[in-house]
Amino acid sequence: MAAVVDQMFKVTEDSKGFSFDNCRRNAFMSKQGVTFPSARKTGTTIVGVIFNEGVVLGADTRATGGSIVCDLNCEKIHYIADNIYCCGAGTAADTEFTTKMVSSKMELLKLRTGREGRVVSSLRMLKQYLFRYQGHVSAALVLGGVDVTGPALYTVYPHGSTDKLPYVTMGSGSLAAMSVFEDGYKVGLNEEAAKKLVRDAIRAGIVNDLGSGSNVDITVIKKGSVEQFRPYEVICQKSERQGDYTFPRGTTVVTNTTEIVPFSVLEVTDEEVMEL
Image 1 (tube, rainbow, N blue to C red):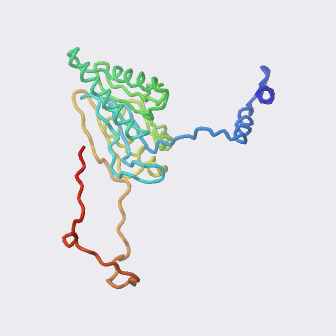
Image 2: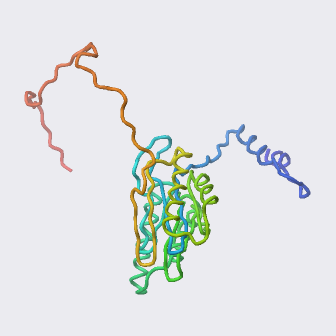
């Protein structure tokens, strides 16, 4: 059987163009009852951009569990060090635990060396930890900060690969956010322009992605100072009820009643003490 399958889907070395052999293979294996892993949505929009004095990080505040909105005001921008912050997308517990662990390691490194931590130090800790678990720790991160080398901005993928770019987006709303960055980014942005660009990028993610929503959180990191805006702007305002949903007593007909006996009336007839 294995030899037949190998022969069916054998790819010759001189094959040119796009190969559909894997599609045929997957269809064949599905008929045999093999289940394939499904793609996971992160349900978040997180972004970062470098401006002339530092870094601006932004995130939405909606936390989802499948199709259910679990939290309207979830904090997705995590503290790493006094000069380093990190946005997290993916499984909330994984992003929270991973960033807290690296934060404690950065504090120990600072106490040991007596120097302010560098962004690349936390980047190396994050990528080595995530690579060790081969993507099973679902934490997609945007890491930003300012150190002796200046502002730095990185993306860290769940399997441990990283990018260093002047502007980045991650999460299920990342494509909509990236379109805003591609259109509006300019080298040498000032702080206000960078904050507005991040706000517009997160708004695009919220409007175009069901996994993102609620508010825009922004953190501005500069040399010697950090400023957090939570929320920076409320995108999804909670609407007011248009009708009155209170009904007068007697609206629903009572078809059966049960007598409630007070506990004080009951009499104990048998008692047994259990020893642990």
